[in-house]
Image (cartoon, protein in one colour):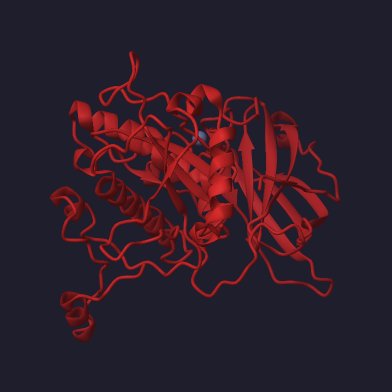
Length: 400
Ligand code: ZN
């Protein structure tokens, strides 16, 4: 974040006090209070593109620059604190900043009336126009990742009190959210109509942004939920701002190699084609002490491996229940392979009901690419030691 150090910060540095990020003077009192315990995040090499997209007949919702800046900065802090708690450093998605402490939001006027970019029309027209804009203004493209916000429709069905009509989802490197008059952090956590509406749309904004930063859905082992609340990429969109909501270690492992989380000086070419998927050898499964143990040797330019276990069905939006485990990776041996080991205690899956489940390995490459491999198994077989895994696995690349 590019800011001019204030007297307070400089004094704090001189006195050896913790230095906190500054909150712009024109932010609301509520935003100042919420951002008061902000931590200083590491500088980013790349930033999220923040686009306010309008049809020919639409207008920005008044106050959007302050409101969206406050909401985005609070979310940036949430992601940054969760990354730190999970051992990945004080890192969050970079945001393009203006001198006045607001987020730089690019207003982009589409070629068609707003209705043509509605939820029912799909994202392709909007994404084509965003792509054309970046082709004409390459200096405005800060990373592969774009956060695209549209004002609510105003028609017989939708308005500021019942916002909607526009796209609201995230996938690949893009996510969509909406703006409306009371989309303001001053309502956060309040038991009022505006407060409940804010949790719905701000929690959704936080969750969809996760998808746009590469995150799949996931749940966490039961003991972790008991400690920290609701994972953002499970049903955290309904709890964010109201109840404890958190990022799982598996989510943070993905964000660790998401382009907008790269720290200044990280010159990785993100999402390039050149990186082969990891090689897996000597895989074996065993059952001991009430859990399944998976071990294999792995070679490749990966940083972390997540393992997800879930009930059928498995397709997107049926995968909220996928319980995520992070693996440990050992020292490299003579042939470049590293040992990987993960234990999946049955009792940690107590929200899962089916005997048949899927085991899903998710490899995160240093350049942000991901590869997956999965198999179905039955717990009743696993408990008898009757589940086997092919010795050599071939993960295939997914996503961007
Ligand atoms: Zn989702």
